[in-house]
Image (cartoon, rainbow, N blue to C red; front, side):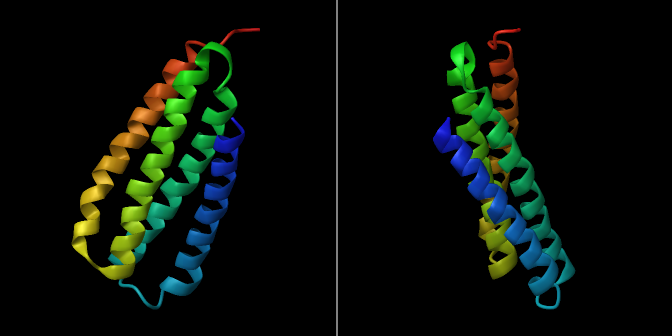
Amino acid sequence: MKNWLFAAGLNGALAVLAGAFAAHALGPRLDPRMLSAFSTGATYHLVHALALGIAALAARGAARRRAQIAAGLFLAGIILFSGSLYALAMTGLIYFAYATPAGGIAFVAGWIMLALAALKTETA
């Protein structure tokens, strides 16, 4: 749980930095479409940093394995989805966009796995 919480905190900080970078440094440098792609990456990065933290906190008892899988999927999604959008916006190289759907699938799978982890949690 500690490692996933660390990853969540680190990714939250990176997402905020990416959003600030987009807002303050990239505006005059990128065309609106690429700026939008970068900003979308930062938004999804931040949302899924939080999801990663939730999965880390859920990784207890019978839900542990499913929550850990969810955390791994969220991290993979951040790397593939947000990372590909960051790279696309910064380089203009379209082939980075081919990783974006795989990241989106990882995000969806992570949410499904988190929901399945919830079914394994002990109720108070």
